[in-house]
Length: 364
Image (cartoon, rainbow, N blue to C red):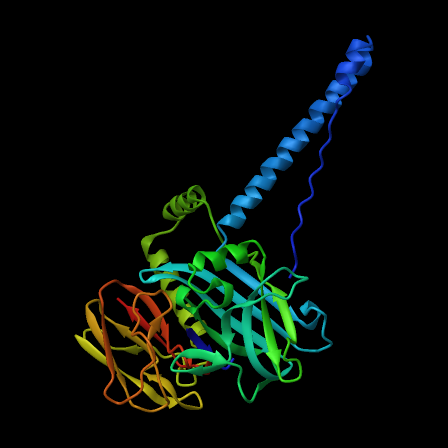
């Protein structure tokens, strides 16, 4: 299981079916004027029905392509409802990687006490369904083992957990199934996120998983049009400047909870190889990469070296470009990757990413 510990509105479409079936009878009775009116009414209804059918088809197509989802958790979502001031939000994104599909997630909560575990369940808004994936709970060797013996308290909003779900992480009725089964359930709004606490072991806050309105999915034609427009109106220098600004903004956002990142991207360009410590001091323990952010040249080999401190760690790129595998512990562990393609690469330690154990590499 790929995860790190720390930290519904249903859209209903109505269709009107306006059927004018008496036009033929009016004609047979010789009421030509009435028949004409009926034909016009019928034609208008058919046009409206066709338009609404097309809209519905477009909506279904958009839903089928959805890859980003959200769940806004509250006590009202629990079946039956629970009185609590606790709230939460889960952000999920389905993505295809070289090693297969993943569902990346972040879980935020506030005003909640003694959280012991959080899952994705199958089921509609009025059902209590089975668990199919863990989001937060007790872990051993990078795998979820159940509920925490002692829950976690969260006051102000903060990230409780983040991680990655792969097909092999599915449990319950989806165990052994492809990740597409979970994706289908999320698209159909037939799955939900539920957080359990010591006071409410059956669940304290919950929400259906629904498509995010800011999915940002575009058609190929729209993308091509925008690209052509940008090419005509912006110079290469402006485009490069915007890209660099976007990269820095993405890094600052990704490393916002990383205590050993102060906005400085250490310049290691021109070096054939660069080393990064894994388990360095930071983020409330030995939960840091040193350096947290680097700038290197294309072709640079980066080697992450474990210090042996802070428990088991691993290296996982957000884009899926590189992955050291299961978390490992020890001072003799190393992982190397050569960066050939220019760009910005964000990565984290899965067990401790929520603590702030994250890193970034800018390749020029």
